[in-house]
Image (cartoon, rainbow, N blue to C red):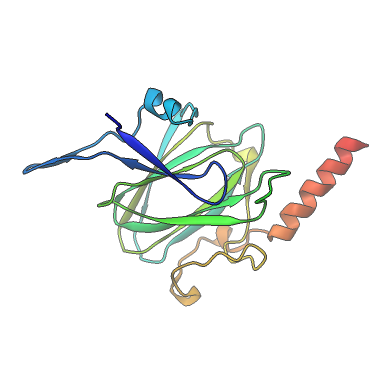
Length: 195
């Protein structure tokens, strides 16, 4: 019996994961992670840390965050309470979809999860108040490797479902660099490696 099904996006390797629910008059039961089942479906991440966030106001925007190599992280994101619009931006060198984004609405009631592989920036905005987001990562948090890109970068062009005036950001997230700055830094690194 299939416990999980994968629903791909146009960007390779990012997938929406649906868990089979077993429902009766008491409610439901479902698995949210099974290493062997995920490996069978082609997801071989070995998760080493679970994270959880509470975002109190509707419109809380977190991101776009990533960790640089060798501390890059694959993530499996789910919502246990409320709803978010969750986004992944392809930052993989040489990828045909470099700089493109995809997104999905995740809800506590729906139970879908978003798998984002290594090489992506991640962010989300809350669509309701009091939202709890849980996510697994396959590499430990490494503050020295933290990076980010502006949530509203025009070159990426994410279509957030809320108006800018309705968003709540941290000081840090509101001052993240542009995608152009990120791309220029990658190109400078490539030139150094080729020299």
